[in-house]
Picture (cartoon, rainbow, N blue to C red):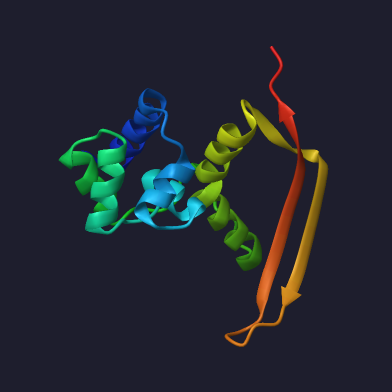
Length: 147
């Protein structure tokens, strides 16, 4: 049986082999793009049908489908953990969704990064009947790697 990390590595390889995009995977499993990407990168457990659909589309076997269903150990970064609760939550976001953001930037823009210098940040409180929300917008210029 594959671990979630081994399955995530297999997904990345299969995407190259098959040409399947994250958006196609999300549409096939019927889940949002970021969630699907994070799940296939090992950050969320998938349901049995979702896992089987993704494995079939990526031409991966039953071992990968089983690994997609495992409860993950979330977090993908190996660094000191911040102790301030607000900063920790942002750290948690980067741990869970950082690999997803990276994959989506590369898929949608190419080999490059989002600038933190030519960059805009917006933080807003938005009223919501279920409890007010915090909306954080990170808006950075795309910078392609130049070799």
